[in-house]
Length: 328
Image (cartoon, rainbow, N blue to C red; front, side, top):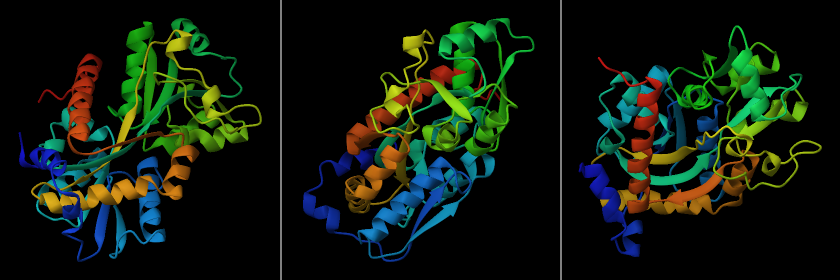
């Protein structure tokens, strides 16, 4: 087991006072492995705002976007910054998917796990003018469509693409996936009728849902979303049925977490665990979760390491079935 993972486990055994034995001495960088404006960037800037508004850290928080190579640039930056306690990276499932799909020589085990902040949902969205009312309607149309129906999403061999291929394999249909530079462009293309569906996160599609340009068919979640406040005139997030309940037996949720470089001290790691625990309790963070229909799920220490180990195994299995694993 690598040093960073051992450090994650060691945090749970530190006395409470040790969380305050170290503090940052210069500005803290939060690296975002995606462009500005996307859901990962929104998360980082919400954290930045919550920290500053509530005076949780004496040092400034700086957001640095490094989207090149499907997030690989950001991951390599953190890997090369071993021992630097003033750098963090906000991560999603790309922390496994990018190395598996590209053979990038980096692993989450090279980093120091700090905290899982939430899990993100994915929804099957269609243009509001389409006749589909359920996931079954969409799959039935896909079975007879010629040429195949088109879904769009954030990049190739990433979460959106993986869900689309898993839908194909589960339902026994052919779907053409169109990669874009992010969930925003995929949303624009769906609203314009240039693709038949996408599987965007709630945050990436809520504006077009409110405007009436798109509609949700189902959520790729084990259970309906919890948020009951109306988003449109007649629907809340909780009113969207699960895909499995409509005959499309596909579930997928994406972690949203924070890591430090490897080879930091347990005291430095413990400082940030406590910091993000405080962030998770702020009204700003709770409002962000509800606004973007995220699943609250704070984990640190061994619980976070256990989640990462199992989630990586699941992704490797799904990516192998999808043919996404790099072979050379």
